Image 1 (cartoon, rainbow, N blue to C red):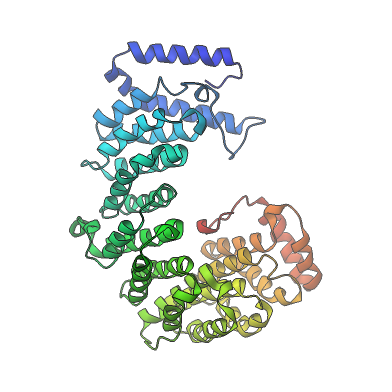
Image 2 (cartoon, helix red, strand yellow):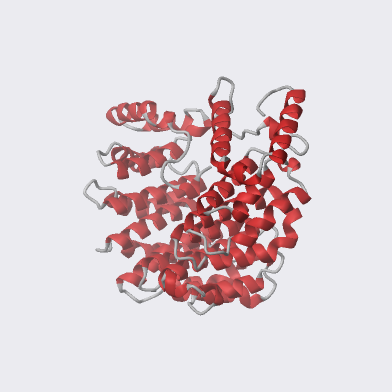
Length: 483
């Protein structure tokens, strides 16, 4: 199946088809895990051998021919439909792994539709969480590979994923949210979905049919997260104006909730809704958030989270007056006595610097406050928050810390990257990796820093760059920023 010769591939396919046709199905199921492990081993060997693709895309030659997967699909389908919970999980995960190593052109039309039905039929059964996670992940891969051919299944996909948001297991809820994002390119009628998710976010929707078993807070958090994802990836398809305004209002109301997770996800909804609605329509809510006078800790944390999401979504479009309002709202939050508030506002402050056109002017206003939070005695969570904000700043404005004006922040980041505490090291490694554009393979940004820093700073940075940064292939902490 991994040979270069087309005749060998065709012969192997024919042999495999004969095997699957003549060996009893139950016996094949007993060997399903062995089959899955064998394929995984072949893929791993192909990636790592000399001339292999490494972590890049690999397509198994034997599956990328006409009917290449046909001998195996019935085995996996039988495992999904009739196997015990262990076999169902192996079959669903294995099917997903086959999809990853097969080109979409060999999955087109009826073939991928044939895979979809059994998964949708059994995902709602009383399966253990591992089986549900495997099925939902594979349904997500089917959406990626199948594209428009699956449009007729959109209602079933949507019902499946929304129902899973109420599952007692967190990983099931997380995978369902990811899958909803993948469904958005195919969805045409967004308003009913948004309405249902808004209701679920407030705790009064059919999406919460299992709310007693999962816990109202966990379900509410998952539903808010899903609403933010739907707005971000498909919100422009909404046709009823009230769909978006109700989403924004719901997010605004819940950023003062007593639960931290709900506040954070409500802030995501605010940012996503602002991005879809535009500045003119969302400005009253933004101003309301920035001028909020509620000074309890929950409200301040929610405000900081909302400022971050607003900056990330529409920050560059807000204009000087709104930027000044954001700065005024941020300053007291950055020196708040509560770690959670300082962490969230540090992230917001970094992102704010990356999205304003006159960043150097605002750098002067914020630099001392940010440096104070980068003190080695500060709480680890706050260090992580400011590292995340600085990463967002560099992603949005790659040249933000070039020149003499950036040396102080970069040097403070370097000290924390050399901390003895790994939870501090790794986030600041990410920041420096982005700031020095290591992935691009040139040393221009590093050389700029070395030209402006003092000798001791330069020596330390050269060492860190050589021993750590150039060996990084991707970000270690902040998955949402993977480039």
